[in-house]
Image (cartoon, rainbow, N blue to C red; front, side, top):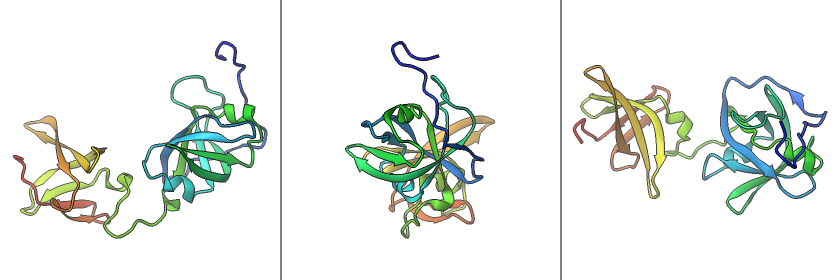
Length: 197
């Protein structure tokens, strides 16, 4: 159903249905149309939206809530994407005017993890840290990375673990002073941290 005063939009014919890649990661969502020539505004999930810039093929799925103008997964061939203020603006081959861009409002953007730029040594994508086991120098298991929080000057690992059959959480700063090593292949982070901190 269209919002009052705004007609329901439909996607242009050139947008193809697609299969979501197995390694797809959600990297942002489309906020709204931007201008009249088919550009649209993107709200990236990361403060550093390099994953959006590294891929020219974005996979879109409709918003989980709100009006849906399409269903399933569609492929968008991105012609150009650039930073603008605190967001990203982009245009795609298939989107030629404002009405077509408005039809994308709320869409979730996925790109294949394999298209992310290579991280520098000792830098990690958050998505790669999720699910890793965290152990201290003594080999004591502290939990599994559930999520990461940006707290301004540092990132904090949120670990989930069980104690006496109850699910609990602990937080650990993801800074060099406490992180001894990250073994992505071994799915483990070794830290200088004690369970009672």
